[in-house]
Length: 238
Image (tube, rainbow, N blue to C red; front, side, top):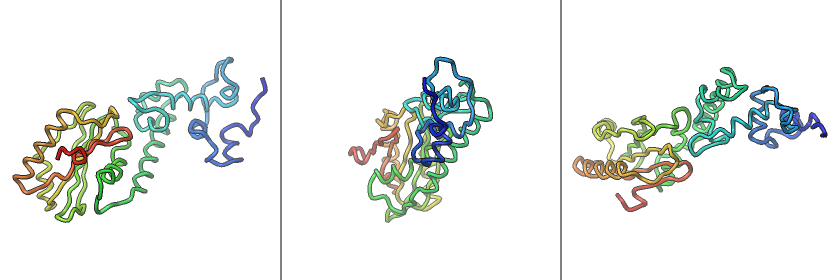
């Protein structure tokens, strides 16, 4: 079998053609640098670059509905270290890479004062649900003034895999603290399915009713799935 030339290896390919030419596995292989010795019947590319074989194993690890690069933020060091060739140093390096990517994404997030559509709310808040702890449900609270301008945002709860415990009392305390007139609630479904549960519907209706009593309007409750979102307002449920 013809041996691959050096220019086909990830690092040399980067020097010749740039980062854009590399696959996800090749990019990760450069960061890993080394990998365990491959079996004799492994593909030639793995024989020439054990780090590439290791990178492909990591990207193939399932995490809920996610895999590949999108699954890296969901993998803990302990889970990564179950892969042969991944020790503590490599596991920490991979987790730091995922966190660095999240922070870059957050730094590039376009700050909005107003939200013309539920989609704009979902896109604005989605980066806040990335990173460590993505396998649990989180709830974000957005507080707005009488003209619909954002005046404060906060992480309200971090729950379990199944549900986040939303406290109406905490929501309204924060709304009064910042003198809000309207508010919006967002939470994620770790399963990736944005369809509302019975509990989601119940808490939404409770917040609508309590808000009316306190002259605070729930403008929307948005659920974030893996790619899509569900808006109670768009669905006509508010």
